[in-house]
Image (cartoon, rainbow, N blue to C red):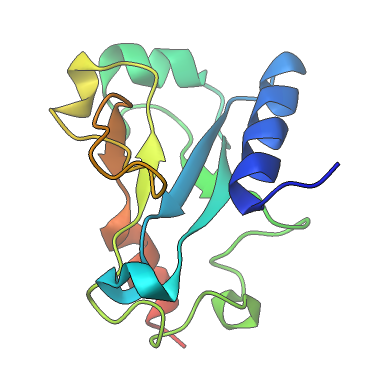
Length: 140
């Protein structure tokens, strides 16, 4: 079959979770804040020793030994961000917003994971990851 980046990312998140790897869907609903420029989704995995459910339960990213990081190849985005097609100042111009889906609505602090195909749907709890991706990708 066929799938978009969203479909493939959702399948990968489910497969990783089934194998015991904490994973979540991440993406931008609109490059540079313009829906005409398209959207994109990818996967982040929890890289630490505490489980993602511990992080979700406590809401404490700093207190746990680990962090959410993009899953791409066998290295990290921070290692060489400029090698990634999407990681550049043209894509992250200050208007591109990045969100991660969350499992726990109360810990999302009222934020939603925007669905590019249903912009009015605010039912999926989310976390704003814009500052992390902007910081990394503006090095290019």
